[in-house]
Length: 115
Image 1 (cartoon, rainbow, N blue to C red):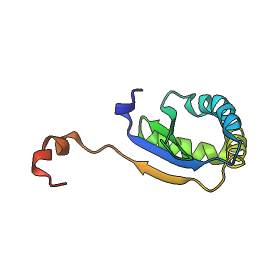
Image 2: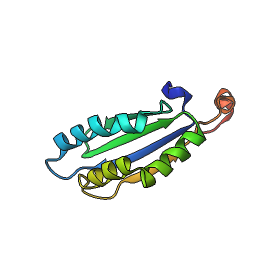
Image 3: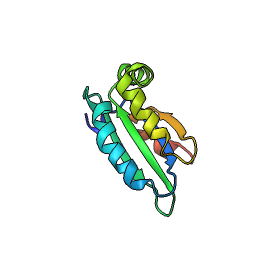
């Protein structure tokens, strides 16, 4: 799946506990392949310039894939264990956002939009 084809973009803005960056990198190497295994999800991590925050962004190919992933993180024992270890790395609860594509037809009329 290409990012621009995503039906749902799920973002977790996180702040790690002090000295947990290397542990987080190891977590990403272990966990992301589990979350991406069905091929309908792509996970990436972005660092925010001049910030202690990171964005974990997951791109889902469909609404169904997003719903399935939400079910799995609550019921699949491997994913439950991974999320428990992830929570232990965080300095505070994550900020969560869910986005869906803005139809291109609206963008084509951007000259008519006032920003």
